[in-house]
Length: 415
Image (cartoon, rainbow, N blue to C red; front, top):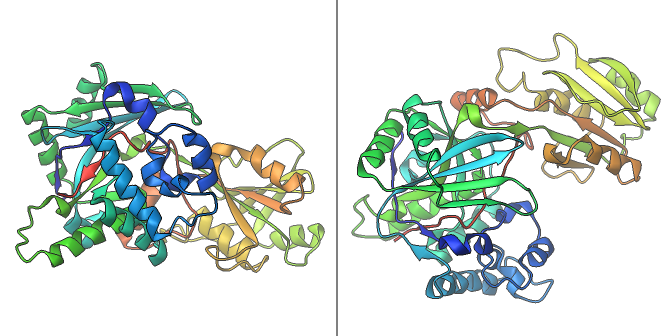
C-alpha cells in the first residue's frame, strides 16, 4: 500500500511566483537557461541550473556549481523569495494544455515504497545521471524539483480536488515558452489531509510517469541519510521525497519520434523494399501524415510521407513489451534494417518530442541534417502501467509527457 505524508512546503509568495518559477532542469541546456533567466535574480534556474551563475562554458558538474546551488537556495530564503509554510499540508497542482486540465496532488512519497517496488518504474536509469541529481539533493538538503507520478483513478480524491478547483487558486498564471496555464492550491484542512493520506493507503501501487532519475536520486539520498543516522527512527523528513501524483486517465502522453542520419548504406528504394517484409507500405504523398492507430508508423523520406502498417505476426499482443510500437520499430526498422541497436548511445539517431509536431521531423530531414524520420503513435498510460506491473522495462525514448511540471512552485526540505 502507498504511504504518503503532507509536508511544510517552501514556496514563493504569491506576488513573486512568476519571477521564481521556471521549466525543469532537464528540458533545456545551460545556454537556454542563461537566456531565460536573463537579469532576473529570482529565477529558480539559479538553483536548478546553477552553472548559469558562472562564465559560459563552466561545467554543470563543477563542484563550485553544486555549492552555488546551495548558496542560492539559502539566499532565496534569506531574501524572502522562498518562504516555508508553518503547517504540514498537501498541495494541488493543475496544468491546462489545449483546453484540457490535469490535477495533481503534491505529496511526500515514501522512500521505502520506492525501494520495495510499491512505487513502480518503467525505465532504466543511468548511474551518472542519478549521481548528478543526488549531489544536487545532498548539497541543498532538499528536493528542489518534484517527480511526476500517476495513480489509478480515484473518485474520492477527484471529488476533493474538484472542490478545491472551484475556489480561487493560490497561484494562477500562464507560463512563458509553453503558454500553458498553471494553478496551485494549498490543502491545509486536517480532515482533507487525513482523507488524502487514507485514500493513498488503499492504493497497491504508484507509477513513475516522468522523472526516473530524480526519483532514484531522491530515494537513494533518503536511504543514505537513514544509514548515516545512528538515531534513525523512520519518521524523519528525509524518509520522503516530493512527488506530484496525477490520476492516470487525465495524463497526456505525446508521440516520441525518431530521426536518423543515414540509411545504413541503402538507397531509398532498397530501404522501402526492406520495409515491405514486415510492413504494408503506402505512399501518402507530400502532405504531412500522422499515424492514426497502434502499429501504424509514418515515414518521411525524400519529400514523401509513407504509412507503415506492421503485419500480423510481427508483434505479440500477449507481451506487454513486444506489443509496443517503440519495440516494433526498434526491432524491425532501426535494428534489423538500419543497424542501430543501442538507442541510448548511437550517434546516428535523435529523438523529437511530439509537442514539436511532425513539421519538426520534416524540417530536420529537408535541411539535410537527417536522412529520414519515423513518427510513432503515442504509448498509452495503460501500457505503461501494465509494463510496470509486469516488472519489465520500456524501450528507451518511449514516452513524452506534456505539459512538463514547472519548478519553483513548492520545494520539500529533508530536515
